[in-house]
Image 1 (spheres, rainbow, N blue to C red):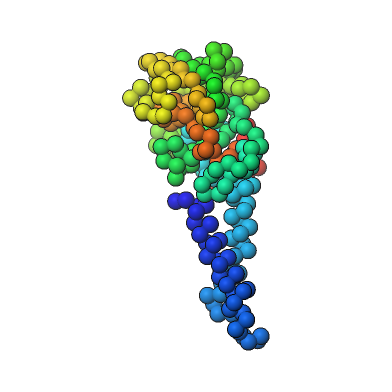
Image 2 (image 1 turned 120 degrees about the vertical axis):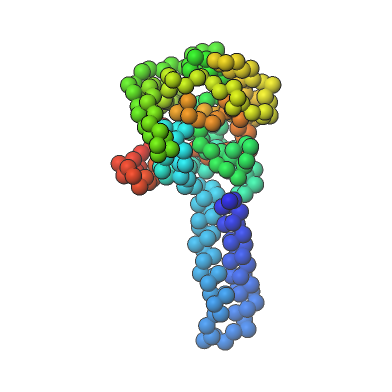
Length: 267
């Protein structure tokens, strides 16, 4: 469901009724006559819809985390806020960038439209920038030939799908100025070759049983989940085009199961 498009259509409808009444209809009504319901209701909703549309389109948009691909940074059921303007001002619905502000940086958590199905929003961590060479070997990440620093941080257990108990090792990974936790499951292979799909610029990548290397093309980004062995990401479906970017995730604003997470910033 394209919520932005629905909001735009409601805005046009209610705004059209308001404008029609302002320019034409009210001139034909007696001063003491009440507005008909089909004029009163759209006029009442118009300013509310306008404010919500502007806020969601240009400032902040809420999202809900549906999967465990970003554990431990983000948990299933987290409601997060996404900064819509930090990566540039974009035209609502068509998502064309009007004003350049900042570019995504390595280590930032980014929401984007899934390249295979732009009606679906994904959230992952930015690993590679345009021109970067990304290698993942033996569950270690390399950027432009340099291994990304990681430090052991104990173990982490969680329940997947409500039934499966998963035991992983936790590490702190440092990407440029960003320090964040990742999970690695030692019992899972580094790569599932069967899950690699054809994607644009697939020729920029080389795969084998234990590693891959990808050169990020201009205007694209390489993204991975923090739950490295339970994430569908750029390793499998390719690069994120700049035109698919929605914004930068910056805060958890609600979680029904864990209220202590409310207000936490997203690193």
